[in-house]
Length: 542
Image (cartoon, one colour):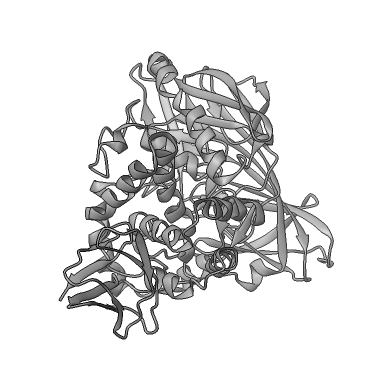
């Protein structure tokens, strides 16, 4: 998401203190766990059919939920957050009853649910959805106006989940195989959502319905609405899987700036296909859409609000100068097409899978165009934003992510693992292999860890445990005593044995294998010792 910046660092520090005292509730469990009312059915398809009324900030419509019965059960959980309400639910045209428990609705199905059968329900709902307080971090609907006073509206809901604005199976483990998105808006406004625009329906009440179709699996928070007085243009990118359609939607007053700034999309796509493999959604195309907030990684409908400038709102988060060579939102949010939208975490606790790899993608983009030293300088420069306050992995089954360090610390962990692998082509093969092996899948941390260890031929479990599950930063203590270089790890988990590199007396880098016990190697008396600063560790000379 894409989204940690300096302002949010202050918020996260306050949130960290709050989170330590947080007592998880029944609502948290209903939201964050695979309840028995979720587990028995496999989500296959959504059709959102929603009318948006910017005049009074209300929405109304229906969602068709198609599913396959895995194990017979007569109670189905659908999620919709307050203050929105469900007015009716039907199956095969027959109205069924339901009860509300917080933001979860338990539907009492009359029709007998038979194993392997294909079934569907239609959920009718409406109301005034939650307005975003600080999109996209604290999301919902953003109800804004452009400079001409026309409505400029967008949704963003990572963390909160899509049930903040439409009824769904709001847990990341289960994605629909495809989706229709039909959004009705007042003329002359346009809606831009995910996938490809299949048709526009002219309605008698001076509205239009934009019908979009997503051919690929899509995570719930990735589905979005963007409404504005848009101008649009398109081009193609010759990619690894052939011609990829690129489409752009911006407010009319910004089209000249956008046509210049958005030229970076092709360079981004070229770099990321090199590192990660083909763009994962050729069938749905790629869109970059202007919105009234900073931006988000909505699948095939990436949103943009970075002011048509390089850096993060004009700033270089690394303070090295490299971060001003490219537009942070174009690069970072598009990187999520591989890590978040292609490979999606099953549980919010594993959000690092999205954010660590995508933070690291900024380094790789920089390296692709400006060289390996530039990429390394960028990721190292971002270390000043790391707090080492709590573990990166959060709490499972309650929809709770871990430390915001999943961005910069996670990126530096991956940079460190690259040094351990010590083979750049093998490393690139691992990144591309992740996107191929877990193509269009939801995954756990264990799957990612096991794959990377297997492909590297190195047991990385202690590295992952240290950086993901422990807040401490490893410290390498060392001393030079006569003709001996002594070294060991401290401030670590038990058994931590990550390799490290020294340069001794101006020779080539030497790989050593410290443990929590003292080790030593012979050196020439008076030899200089240089430590590899690419490893994200603390060092202390004794």
